[in-house]
Image (cartoon, rainbow, N blue to C red; front, side, top):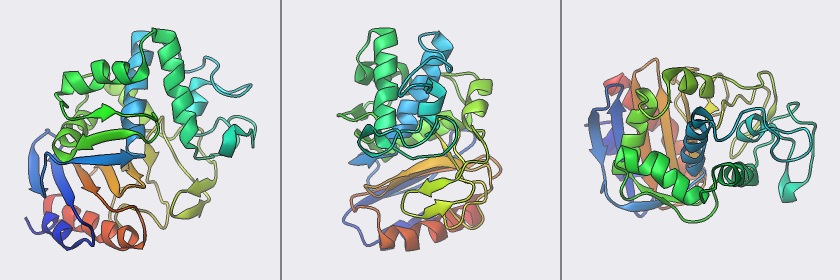
Length: 269
């Protein structure tokens, strides 16, 4: 397939990619699908999904206190708790979008405390095992410490298009803008007047510049990781795409990822 073939030209040591249809069919692949990669912030998608399950199970509630004073589980997962570097409170909860890794560790700690199950085990039991993601694991930090393969994340991408572990209504809420109208910095791309996020899922909307394609729909959601990884789902195109690499995010990714995404949309959308 021509679009995924572009991965071979990326200036990285190793890369793998997969395109997944809304029906869960893997339409095209590139690279070694079973190779393990560090996920960095793509881990947040997995942590968020486990949290959705915890909410549906009744282990935690969206509006229960978590993080700094006045913050809730909903604030933490949407990057609106007000926490910033070194866990300093920089804003009143719900008033500013401050992207912060450790907010997701606090989120995982909340699930752990409520369920009585260590979060890595909870994530494995709730997400990895049911989806057959046998090569995936959380090594350390719940915001950036995941390890997985393209083959496993293709299964997760299929789940994000036709959920089986949570209700369609819950996933719709998670991929709809939470606390709309908030500005903030999109890591790697600078200040965004509308820095939209759902419940753990970054939402493309009309952000510019952005790591997805010029032709990605505003409803596209997902995440990218500093380790050179991304996963997006474009509901309007009925497609999802996973790409993993072993070179940290930088100019090469800024230059390579958007045209790659547009080529995937043109070929399969």
